[in-house]
Amino acid sequence: MILIGHFGITLLFCAPLANVLVTSGYRNDVPQWVGIALVVTLLPDFDLFLPWFTHRGVTHSLVAAICLGVIVAVTVTAVGSGSQPTTSTNRLRRAGLGFTVGAGGIVSHLIGDVLTPMGIRPFVPVDSVYSLNLVYAKDIGANLAFIAIGVVVFLTVYSRSNDPVPTDGSMSSELAADSEISPFNP
Image (cartoon, rainbow, N blue to C red):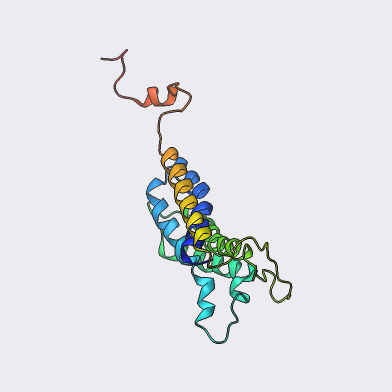
């Protein structure tokens, strides 16, 4: 996969995460978590520029996913993140989200690369290569399809998660109870 293909697959991973964040009341935090995931998904290919790593070696493994998950979890917990106040519960939540986004960014990269003939070695140091051999990494059509599908799915899920009105047409009694304006209370 090339950059845009990896971004598309990562956006597919981020869609359910965005839904959970929005429905949990953390809509404003979605851009930063998606941004972190998009940056992390680039990291495995840094092995192309580092002479002591082989391409699609340890940087393309579950070991890398776990390591990056821990690094992101520790970083966002130490630095703080988003609109959540600093409490022990929110630190734990940030750590969990950080691990999910860090590891998920790497795993989404691995998913893109396992689709190619070159495959990946997800269980390094075990030498077995796994490949679904479905598309070539530089197939521009496949990469454009992944980014298009990723953007459409992410934006669809994110925009629907933002809808405060129940989709079944009924009004929530909680919304009515919280409203200061009521037809029964002028």
